[in-house]
Image (cartoon, rainbow, N blue to C red; front, top):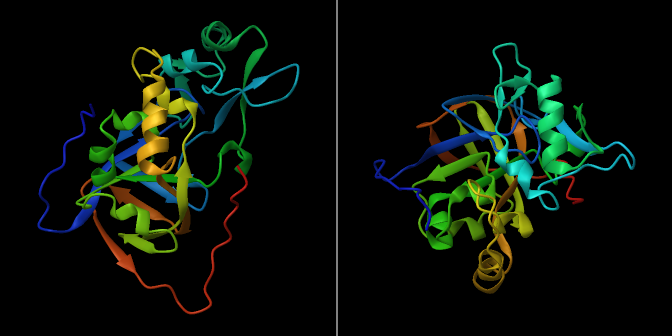
Amino acid sequence: MSDYKTKEHNGQMWVAELWRYPVKSLAGEPLEVAELHPDGIAGDRRVLVVNERTGQIVTSRTHPRLLGLKATLGSDGEPLIDGNPWNDPASARAIALAAGSHARLTRWDGPERFDILPLLVATDGAITAFGYDRRRLRPNIIIGGVEGLAEREWPGRRVRIGEAVMEFAQLRARCVMTTYDPDTQKQDHAVLRRIVHEFDGRLALDTAVVAGGRIAVGDRVDFVAQAPGETVAHDLNS
């Protein structure tokens, strides 16, 4: 079952958790405060694991042992892997052990580092209905104070958190990554089967940043109207 707990917040929605993943497919770090930019949370997914032979991105979908490595952001803004600089030989060895001898780390600032959009937003109501550890969903933002599966009606809507505004594009189609325990990497196929059977294969929301700004755990979340004819460019190619 999920260890996520909801709480009362005067009937309002709020930022319950913030997460950053400095190295794609590695375990992430919880935050109290984050700077939100058009390309997501500052420092998110700035380093990728690639296969040096094929040039393709390597993820925990095929190499779940990557989830056992923890990525954080150092005081200099550079990613660390289990406390070591990402470009340190110790990090290279850890990645090779987790993803194979041809796996290498590379810094990448382009939009390709995201599967779809820069943010993935989950809600406490959907996490409770899901019933498993919320880390399996790898959200950037968890919104608290949401009743049940209300997030399923949110695609196309916008919310404001402080000065930041984001737009929900679509529900995220979930993959095999959800089947791996975040702590042990043990696989449980029943997790994805449940998502498919009970949630039409989709949980949490692919989200675009309309306006950036500082956001923090506890900040109020409010729906905002979209101006007539106003659009946000969504790259929904997975």
